[in-house]
Amino acid sequence: MASTTIKIFLPHGDPKRLRTAELSNWTGKAVAGPRSEFDSVLAREESSNPGVYFLTGYDPESGKPSVYIGEAESIRDRVKSHLDKDYWNQIVFFISKDENLTKAHIRYCEGRLIDMAKNVARAVVKNSQSSGSKLPESDREDMEVFLEKLQQLLPALGVEVFVPAISKAEASILENELLYCDIKGLKATGNLTPNGIVVFKDSQAVLSPRESSAKYPWSITMRNRLVEEGSLMAKENYLLFTQDVEFSSPSAAAAVIHGGQANGLTAWKNKANKNLKELESE
Image (cartoon, rainbow, N blue to C red; front, side):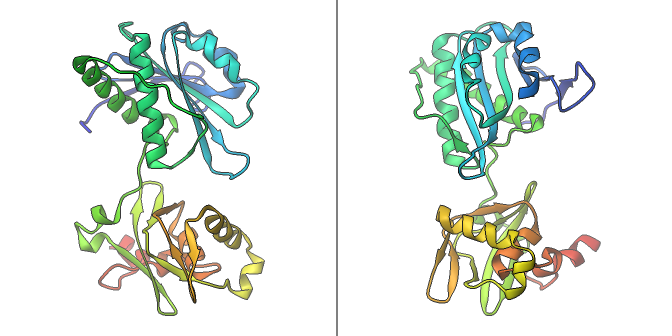
């Protein structure tokens, strides 16, 4: 993505409350706020415009981040119907300041956004299906630019459902960027990300947790959740990562791999056998 300047306005001076956001040289505008300020968000003049919106929170069944992506000719009128759902705690919506978004445009954007969110798989997408819309080629290109800018702005507002974890292929372009976590002849490969660390598909983890893990059961809970999701699969004498999995810290990833508490700064090493603590001190 091209470099840009983000302008975020805090009407109450609090970055967790109502806020608006814009990018330099872009006609789009975002309005965001917590569910506790739902009325204030909808009182904004922008909410009467057509646009796309995101309701984010956590899925009550899996505990994973969740998102509902919708479109409306009037944001204000449409999102009120979601008040009976309790999985979301933040709303973000996007409109165009030049009022050039038509129903077909926003339906196209909704369909593309739902598909992208499902492909990235960072959050549970609560939509049962996407509408989508066919557009003339020129309009379609305009909307793709709109979507690119939207994705550039969303993380600054705390929504990361479109931010893909780095892939092993991308990390291996520079071999010294790869990190390794070894234990009992098993090997896991990963790479640092802005959110923590990603453990790559085909990495291995110990099959049975340590006895000491009972003192810190969170690592076992995380392992069990990954097994239930299918991200970890039991083999004859180890667990196998069936897909890339991102963790919030190197220690969280190492704890899952080791089957109990682990110091990620010393457990993860590069090709030259330098651990993260040594690398950070250089």
